[in-house]
Length: 358
Image (cartoon, rainbow, N blue to C red; front, side, top):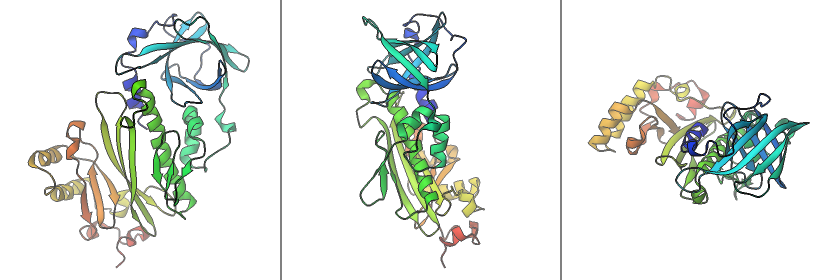
C-alpha cells in the first residue's frame, strides 16, 4: 500500500498545533497500541491508537480517517485531532481525553471553544468476531489481522456491475475487472488486487484537504483492464494517477500476470527464463526508439532499469517502473512480439504453451 506516502504528506504543518489540547509530549504508561470501536456522543466511531506511529479514527457513517497526535495530561491519554480545511496548515478540530475503564476506554471529546464535551466510550475491536461480508481471500484475512479499521470499512458487500465483468467497491468507488466463470482462486486474487487499491484510495482521500475530498479530479484514480485471457493465463494492466495533497500529482503503471487455475502471480521469468533484466532493457531500448524523442531516449538509456510487464495477444509489454517523477512522461510501453521471445521462453511449460499454440 501507499499509506507511508500519505502519512508523510499528512504530518507536514502539524507543529503549530502541537500543544492545542494541552498536556505534554509522550503517553501515559497504561497506553497500549490497539483498535477500538464505540461511540462519540451518539455517533458510532472506530479508533486505532499506535504510541509509536500513526493514530486515527473515523465516524462509521463517513468512513474517512481523521488523524490524531498523542499526548498525555497526568495519567490521561490526550489525542489531538486536526484537519486541513484547504491547501495549508492543519487546524485543530477536537481533543480526546481518555482513561482506561472496565472493558475498554472512556473519556470525552471536545471541539475547540465548545461549551461542553461529548462522552466517548470505546471497547477493543475484535475483527475476528465480525462476519465476513466478502468472499474469503488471503488479502481480506490479512487486512482483518493487520489493519482493523480498513477491514471495518471494506468488509461489506461490493457491487457487481451488469454483465459480471467488473465489481465496484462502494466507499472508494474503485472498480476492478472480473472474469465470469473464473475459479474461486482467481476471483480471490482479483478481489485482493481491488482491496489494495480501495484501501489506498480511502487513505489518499483522507489526507486531502476537506475542500478537495469531493473533487473527482483529486485523490486516487485507477484504470484497470484485462489485456490477455486464455485457458491458463490472465493478464491485466493497472494505471493509477493520484494526488493526495503533496507537492505534485503522480502516477504509476503495474502489470499483472496470474495463473487462472491457482490465482497466483506468475513472474515473467517463469514464462521466459532467459528474459533477464539486462535483456529486457536491451530489447526495450531497441523497440522504444521509434516512439520517443532523443531526450527521452537518453533518459531511458540512463535511468530505466526496472520494468513492469503485462501480456497481450501480440506479445510481452514492458513499461519502465523506476523513472523519477520529472521524467515519467518518457515511460512508454513497448511490445516484444512472442516470435521474438521464442528463444527466451520455457516452451515445456503448460502456461507458455497457451502463448505458442503452434
